[in-house]
Length: 484
Image (cartoon, rainbow, N blue to C red):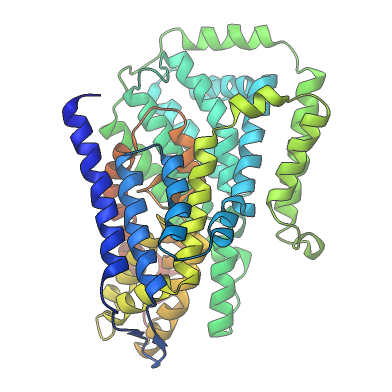
């Protein structure tokens, strides 16, 4: 590394520490007060949590140290600055959400090991052909479709090895990033988020948002109602991301000459599916089937979503389809640590009251503004928070306050529900915003800074779509922005 690069790295290390110490040492700040008069004080621990939040964001974006090590720093600094005890700070690193990500990665590893991913990649390529732009579109559409019935983390874990196989056929490698590789993997992450907002099964944030909405308004939202309002939003985003990516990251090759012949030849070499492949597919299908059925079978709803995938992984180790080498070399522990730290900072902001203080102060500034400003302001806050903390937490912090403010301004509560849910599903700025972002990063085709910069215009695009749908499509299907 050059001397200049070292100074840049040291600068951002110090900048993060400066914000941490500054917020920890600053005088007490005024409490936040919502429109109903409820007071939200900011404790000393809450102030320090905001400083840690800023430190983590700076270190993650600029990769001053490995992103997993930054996560370890999150736990360490919580103890050093007496924000939370070590037992709480580090317990979050093994949250069921993190273990769900581990289970999803194990599915990708076993698919790759037994050859299922190659079959899926060759089948996809045989449909979309040799045009690199159509290959990108094919991957994005398949990703989005799968997220309608699977959690987007599981979809990303399944798609990753398929895309690595496609990248190898393109001629790319982890040692030499390509524009095609950047578009392929970042686009997968973005379209996984876009597809996941289309149905209630796309992510935990969706039923959580509907639950808060029902609790505060007394109105229920059906599976069909949810999809009717958000599926067009998600699919417009999928195609918009594809159009933007083939412009920004125009593939070096318009076609992959001889790809179809290579695909046919390599597919023929695989022969018929082996017994081991069928076994793997059957076990994973059962696990995914359990995840899908848990959304409408009450007896399954008490079982955490991480259990089916981890149980599938356990079966693979028992039957020796996977072994300890796969666990040591195949699992990206840097990413596991990344999400452990993301869960820790999310719970830290929530438990210290810092997140509520931020949300109420932000939304209080919107009181009395035009309805469009309020909706976009709420959407922007969700967008920012969901890039740093769990999207379920972002929804639980912002949506209740937004519904209270909206009721004073006669804003349709459904408009706030759907705009918040859409934003929570599409964190396009930071790797910690969603598991597909971090899984895509494992391709080594892009830097965290590239992901952040690419995400800025994409995030502005979905904000603009909230505004557009608020005055066009949503009123047409019976959801006017203001109540009569």
